[in-house]
Image: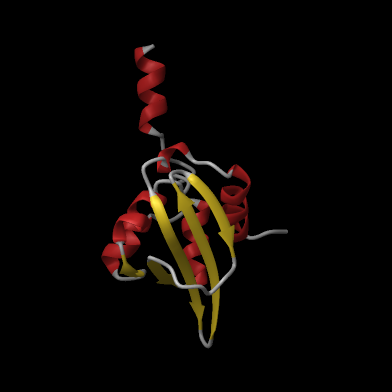
Length: 123
């Protein structure tokens, strides 16, 4: 059984293109630190086209956090911006990459997505 983190990154890689990132290009590496071990996930984004790998290569932006927190982010149990504000995630480089990619994380399971509500009520 795959964890939420692996499923999240594999899903991004399978998509290949994400319309929410059409105006974005750059590299973003997530470093999931647990003691002496670090698991790396590298996103290469080129105007919405996404490629994912597990490499420790240089990146425009590096976001570091614990594997447990990232698992909660990938499962929609935690909010990335809140984690940044609390200092549970650190960012080196262009924070705009993190802010844009954060929109791809799932919403909490019990939340009501505003665009769906608006669409259902207006149309």
